Amino acid sequence: MVHTGDSQDNTQQVRVGVLALQGAFLEHVNILSRLPNVIAVLVRRKEHLSTIDALIIPGGESTTIALVAERSGLLNSLKDFVQTKPTWGTCAGLILLANEVHKTKKGGQKVLGGLDIAVNRNQFGSQIDSFEAPLNFANVTTSDTDLFPAVFIRAPIITSINSSDVKVLAKLEHNVGQTDASAVVAVQQGHLLGTAFHPELTDDDRIHRYFVQIVTQILNEKLKHAKT
Ligand SMILES: NC(=O)CC[C@H](N)C(=O)O
Figure 1 (cartoon, rainbow, N blue to C red):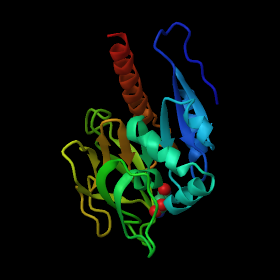
Figure 2 (tube, rainbow, N blue to C red; figure 1 turned 90 degrees about the vertical axis):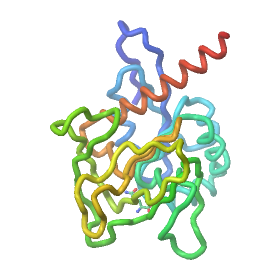
Figure 3 (spheres, protein in one colour; figure 1 turned 60 degrees about the horizontal axis):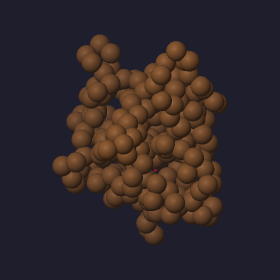
């Protein structure tokens, strides 16, 4: 789980936490552990948050993750963390980072918020529970021949973008069931990244590398400000 990176490389190490309450957290840890200069940390208690530079909220069941976080006294600390620290939500994690969630049963759903977007949970319904779609992903793919193999599992989509700070990174390339091509499936708002799919379930680590790049950039900026 702990990777110290290449000793020849002077790049600073980053500690990336993975919220480990429910869902596909180990798969993220496995990919992070392969990256140079990254230490993956399982996050289960609020004390863990003060030991990390950034956080990944994995896929799983967003209602369950929120419930377990609340019961373990982690929910409010997570809300504070995502306001300022680099955080990436995948699938259920994206839902938890959204300010507005639709298609949720009566009683609503607790979220952390942060991304000025609305999402529809379970967009593709039971008919198309899961599928793989190649995507153009801004800052990650460079041509139509190196698309990202995105795995969608009972996935949400982003139905509205409510701030000009939110940048669209990827859209579906083809219609999927009732959902049109051009549905937004990945966004970034400053230090927050959200993907409706599961990059940790493929061998392709480009989006993990992209997230680490965001984290490193933010840490370097902070360091620069601290020195001036
Ligand atoms: N693969 C996933 O993370 C599924 C998300 C789940 N459908 C939810 O609404 O929370």
